[in-house]
Image 1: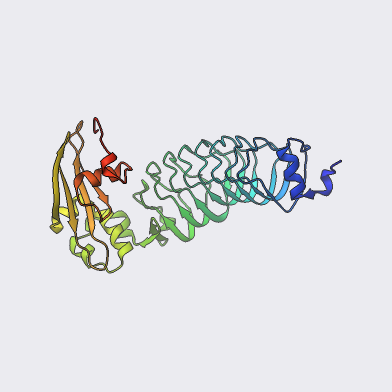
Image 2: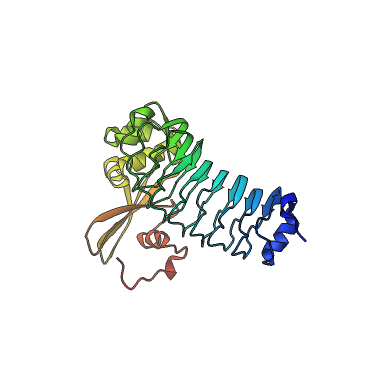
Amino acid sequence: MITAERGVPSREARALILAGEAPEGLQVRGRLDLTNTGVLDLPRGLRCYHLELRGSGIRALPEGLEVEYKLDLQDCRSLEELPRGLKVGSLVLRGCAALRTLPEGLDIYFLDLQGCARLEGWPRRARVRIGRLNASGCTHLTSLPEGLRSLSQLDISNCPNLRELPEGLEISSWLDIGGSGVTRLPDSLAEVRLRWRGVPVDQRIAFRPETITVAEILGEPNAELRRVLLERYGFERFMGEAGAAVMDRDRDAGGERQLLRLKLEDDEDLVCVSVSCPSTARRYLLRVPPTMRTCHQAVAWTAGFDDPKMYRPLVET
């Protein structure tokens, strides 16, 4: 017989949960590891210090769950629901692609939401206190909690629908806004250290890309920062103004395609394929690896084909 109040060893608790025999109110000593298991249910009132559920098939967590230190749900792609009032030190939801909402009363110090592409917003009552909030790749996220006041780090890179940050928010370390919809900062973040997808940048690069010049890009010795400058300036505009060489030409349903190459000092060549959309006639410049030699090879690579001979689209759109 299990006496939950005393707590049971994590190995014994794991066996009970996998067998579907764990009692309500189960208390586990230490770390409970259910990584990459087919577990679909946990007992109500489960209590433990550290719970690992990475890659499991769980869809929802039970009411009354208590995890003191860390709850790791990375790549639980079927997870749709978290219990109300969830309080934990560190919550990892990276790659939980089915999760649309966070629970009311959520109270945490560190929150990792990277790649939660269906997540749209926040509950009315939620606290992220002092620690790090990683929302990178939350492409449907439109806002952060209004009561968010203090963080050490905030990553909202690749959040195109997030266009503003809460007034009064303070960040002690850094803010990553690369590929977000944010075009200005609240006054409380006037001195924050900025990043663009991990690369330190200043506010001019982040918010005034029209001030960047071709000469500045070509003269930038840091390869990572140069890539950010290129992105902010625009590949197509840069290739035209910097005099890129045309390595190959052909035609598809959209019209002429070009493979362009530009040599960069102390870095690999910048190679892009220029294509047109058959339905809209808009032109696009897509960066490809410097090993590309033909337009067809480059377009095949953008479609996920390593062997261009296998890429034979009936209709290109």
